[in-house]
Image 1 (cartoon, rainbow, N blue to C red):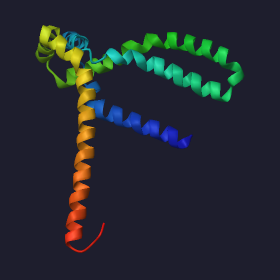
Image 2 (cartoon, rainbow, N blue to C red):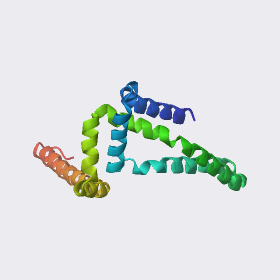
Image 3 (tube, helix red, strand yellow):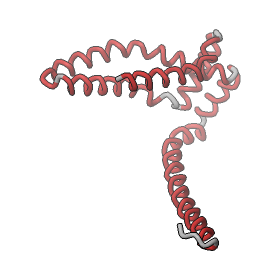
Length: 165
């Protein structure tokens, strides 16, 4: 339990430490509106709704493991709590808008939104997740291939020196 808590605190410190400067400044309503438009147009926040769903599932799993006879009650109470906590989602949206506002001017954000609202920007937004996944697979395949080649080269070089690896 202590290790888990320590890991969570370290992760939170890292997140807030990296994002901290973004929250130190007050941004104009126009700047935040431009950030919101850019975020919405780029669809980078689309998966954020799944956070609360995941937290609810984790909560249910934790409580049902220790109190399996109460699974129906746990399900009902967790769903009610999730609905109540959904009202806090604007807090996350504002923090993300501040992160974007810290890194881009209002004018840059407007250009980003304009790009992502264009046909090419919409295509990029639609294709990005698949391209990232395919790129990750390609990188893994390449890593394995290079790893095998490196192992072979090292063994051959060692054999040339009279050492069998």
